[in-house]
Length: 161
Image 1: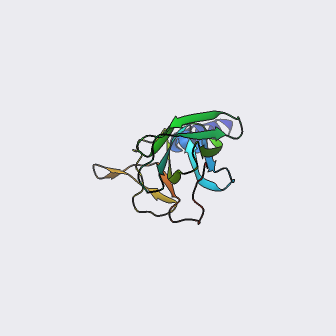
Image 2 (image 1 turned 120 degrees about the vertical axis):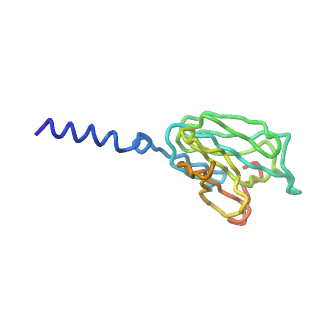
Image 3 (image 1 turned 90 degrees about the vertical axis):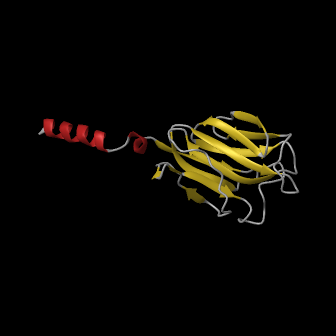
């Protein structure tokens, strides 16, 4: 009887993907504690913020601050060509802000580092859409989550947020 239980558990461990067992959540809020992105990931993730200036052009020349609210780890990234990318982000509750009050955070992209997918911005303008990536006609697993500020609540992820 005990042998059968072990055999079934061993078989089950081969059937279930390892990523199911260790999926954890990344929750990103602004300085007003509004949730701006949230996603279950396996391991670590890459988080990209797409930013623009007041004219709508890709922003540059300032910094984005990304703080883990549980560990107090502060990560700083320079904005270049409208983008700030943070890699190796652990699951947890994170807060995003910027060094200037005029920047607009247009979208947040989250990709699990275990996913083979490319990090691709959402061009549809839809809020909270999950975008599958197709390479050579084959859809790959592992969602990219895009949260857009442009069609959501009236308060953009700014100033200095």
